[in-house]
Length: 242
Image (cartoon, rainbow, N blue to C red; front, side, top):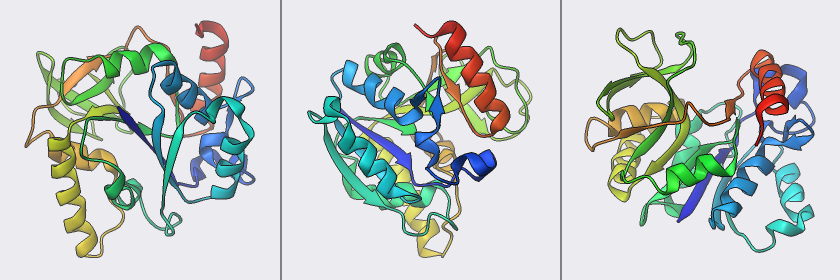
């Protein structure tokens, strides 16, 4: 199984923290976010990893080269040269040739996680599974999900009546879902729209192929979009990390 990590963005909501290095290299308890992700993938036997780079790409390449433990991993790269003015769907578009022929693990680069979470995704019986946190306090800044049993029937970045959890930037995606997402983003790009979010591609895909929620409420992970979430992640990892 392959993994794709979207790591092209600036991380502007973290302010001066990302002046000198990209968001994926922001340290949490002394360890870069990307290192948490790669260690978790490696622990689960996933060594084929595609990364979409952009902002400070040379720092990411230098980090990978500096770690002996990653020499056994097969890295492939795509570049989003317009990272400063585009959104994550365009990064996904740049990686279109690297994914699609088999199920893969999809990760945004701003999530601190551990091997147990990747294991749950990898071993999920569902072809398309989105990790969902059912315990988080929901607000309109989050991808909220409505479920019918385990099936995700709606996901949106809005206050959804009846929402049952927060959809994360972590998923297992099938070739069928990828085909739908690629077709969707191709239409956007053809029309000059490079500012859609990758979550939006998944929202559309789940109307065409079944997507299921994989409850991750009992696992330790944190998505980091701003300084407040960074502080919370530091406190959580220091207190609860396995």
